[in-house]
Image (cartoon, rainbow, N blue to C red; front, side, top):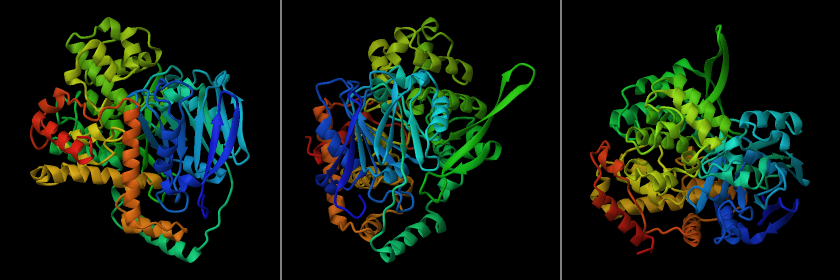
Length: 579
C-alpha cells in the first residue's frame, strides 16, 4: 500500500464463498506486480495437480506506482498455464489497475470453484458472490454489456470476463478487460472457466495522500514531459504498433502464410497506414496514460440481403494484423476485422488462434487432416472458412477440434506436422521472424513471449552475433530488468522512459527508497524464482526444439542455422546456471 511497508492481499475462496484480507509485510521487498505475484504463486501452486484443477490459484497484482505516475497502467495475472502446463503470466490495461488501487488491494488471490456459474464483485468492503447462469454461453461483448447495466460504480469500475471459449475449456482462451484490452496469452480464460468464474467486477473510490507532494510533482513532471513532449512515444500514439507491418515486410521479417514466406505481397493494403487512412475512428488510452495507443477502427459489414449494413468498432494492432491476417494470407482489412471480431466475441487468444489456423491450413494441404474433419476447406487468403473453423474450435465437435482446443503442441503430437508448427517453447509464435534473438528469446523467456527479453530488437543490431556470449548476456539482462518494470506494472511501451535512475527517482518520491543496485538484484530474484517454480511444474530448460520452418524460411539476415541456435541455447543454460 502507498505510504506503508505492506501488501494488502485479498484472498477469495470460490468453493466456500468466503474471503479474507491479509496485510503481508513480507511481500514488500518484492515491490509489487509480477514480483509479488510470483512470490504468492510459488507459495500456492499445486505441482501435482492439473493446471485446470480448481484448487490452483489465480493471482492478480498491481504495482507501487499504479495510478500515481504516467504509463503505469497494467495489472499482471499469474496462474498455471493450461496451454504449456507450467508458468502462466499475462498483462492487461484499461481500468483494472485503477479499480484495484481504489478498491484498496495490492494483490488478489482466487482459488476454488463455484458450485454454479458465477461472478465476483470486489469492492473496499470485500467480495460479493453472484449468480451468472443467465450469462452462460454469452459472448464477451454481451456479458460486458449486461454487467455494466447491472453493477454500480460507473467511472470507477472495471469488468473482466470470459467468453464461450473459456467456459468450454479451450486452453488458449483469454479474458476480456473493459472491452478493448485482454489477458490474452497462456489460457487464463480456461482457468477462470474451470472455476465457474464468468467474470470479476472491481470497483472502489478510496484515496491515498502523497506524503511529499513537492518531490512527487518534480518526478511526475519529468516523466510526463518525456511521454508527451519527446518522440519516445510518438509511434504508439501515431500509427500504433501496426506501424511495424511495412518495415518488417521490407526487411523480410514478416511471417506470412504459416511462415512459408518472410514477406507479404499485400502488406501495403493491411499496413498501419492503410488501417489509419481507411478505418481509424478514435484512439483510446488506459486509465493513467497520457499517450493513447489503443487504435479503434470501424468495420462495416452486411448482415442481411437488401443492402442491410451495420458497423462495429474494433481495436487493432500489429499482432492482430499478423496473426489474423498476414499469417493466413489475408490481404483485406475487412477480412482481418471479421476474424478479430470473431476471436473477440468467443474470448480466444488472437495470436494462438491465428497460428493454429495457419498450421491447420498447411496440414490440410499436406493431407495430415481432412476437409471432413475440419468442416470446411481452409485456404490461405479466404476469410470465411476461418470464421467457421474458429467457431468449431470452441464447439469441439470432433477429435480434431478437441485436440486443437488444447493448443498446437497437442495437435502436432496427435496429427504430426511438427516441422511446420510455428511454436517456440510450446507457445505459438509472435509476429516477427527477425533472427536468432527472436527465436531463442521466445523459446527461453519465462512466459515464452517475445516481450520477455526483446530478442527481436537485438536482431536488428549490426554484428550482434559476433560475440555470442555477449548476445546471450544481453537477453538475460533485459529479461531480469523487465521483471522490475513488470513489478511496477508499467506499460512496456514506456520502457525507454523508465530507465534505472528514473525508476529509482519515481519510487523515492513516494517514499520507497530502493537503489538501482537493489532493483537489479530484485530482477534477478524474480527471474530465478520463476525458473525454479517452472521446474517444479515439470519444465525442463535443457529440452528445446526449434521447428524446421524457422530454419527453412530466411530471416532478413538469411537462413538460421540449427547448430548456432543450439550453441546459443547451451551458452544461455550455462550463464543461468543450468549447465
